[in-house]
Length: 172
Image 1 (spheres, rainbow, N blue to C red):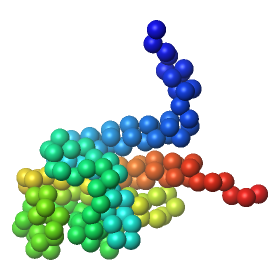
Image 2 (tube, rainbow, N blue to C red; image 1 turned 30 degrees about the vertical axis):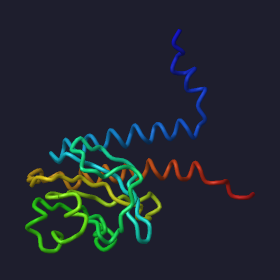
Image 3 (cartoon, rainbow, N blue to C red; image 1 turned 90 degrees about the vertical axis):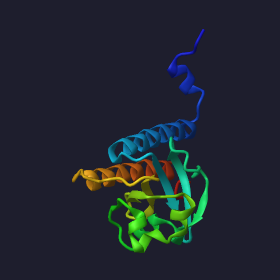
């Protein structure tokens, strides 16, 4: 006999249920991002002061960027959000002198990039939602920057809810 979903959920701690929900939500968002951008890789990265840490990926292209990979933040295209926190679209990276020489572009053969900064509801820059491809991509949907930014905001809310749920309570 297969246990009911409710019975199975009762075997999980609240933290485990939250982690599963976060994984399911972010995986669905990443899949949607690849459809909307017509790109074959989407990922979520967290920023530290100097590092770009991969949290989640949807990678049918098999670019070789994996969960828990760490890169120097300054070598990534996403590092631009530390300077200018606006959605960024680069249809042909190889033709953009500012970005073409970045080590990550050469390492992963990135030709097109779309990204948006992820902010937590308290205003902290958490990281980035990005889509990548080894082929040039036209970004002809005028709503794409806003849509990608909305997905990034949703991811920030999901992560914030889990971050605050796991923080110890303040003393009374």
